[in-house]
Image (tube, rainbow, N blue to C red; front, side):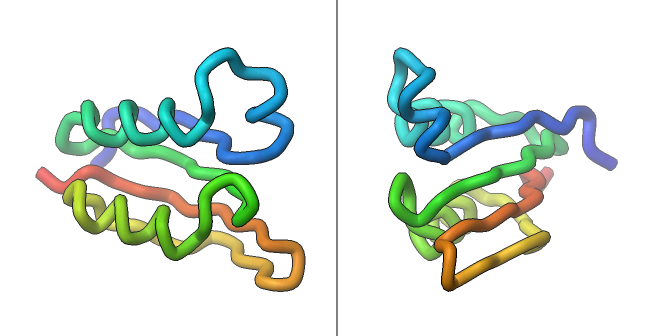
Length: 84
């Protein structure tokens, strides 16, 4: 089904270790995705909220599965697939 599975980190650690802001990298990667591409998105609400991520994915034509969501810690993992 999917051609590739790439990891996108929207975490505080990624924010500190990355020249580009993780939010910017996420938006560019998602907007340039080709049909069938898959992404594992690991994030923290403090960097980019869970609801915002899901909204962006829907707007950009992705299907997604929520692998993990911890409201208390504000963390999430989502597998997203660009629809063809």
